[in-house]
Length: 147
Image 1 (cartoon, rainbow, N blue to C red):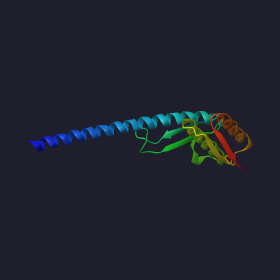
Image 2 (image 1 turned 30 degrees about the horizontal axis):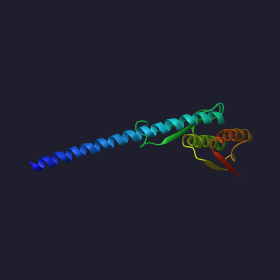
Image 3 (image 1 turned 180 degrees about the vertical axis):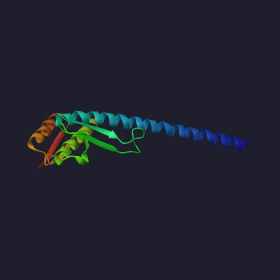
Image 4 (image 1 turned 120 degrees about the horizontal axis):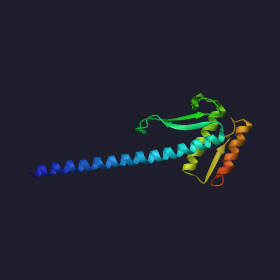
């Protein structure tokens, strides 16, 4: 009789622990997706400023369980086709990654940023677009560019 009570108690504790784990997993998923959605929205907006005729987005490899898959960075600079960053030129990659970094910055701001020669792969027109965007963002954070 006493063993039956202990067994039942253990089973109940196990169920409580499994329920708690399930709740934590659901909360983890919700927080991650909220963060992902906000950064993706920022990324689209910033990329469109850096590439006025272009578009960009983040895509999860596994939308049902993002913790299993990776993240693809997709962009369409100018009027070109959608592609992954691996298929872009150096300047296009630079603009795309700057947009991603600044998107994260907008989600979770830091008081200052040090940018080391981020315009090295950019032509003058794109360097000017980046400079204008950083000037706009510098109202909330300090940016230091090194040469």
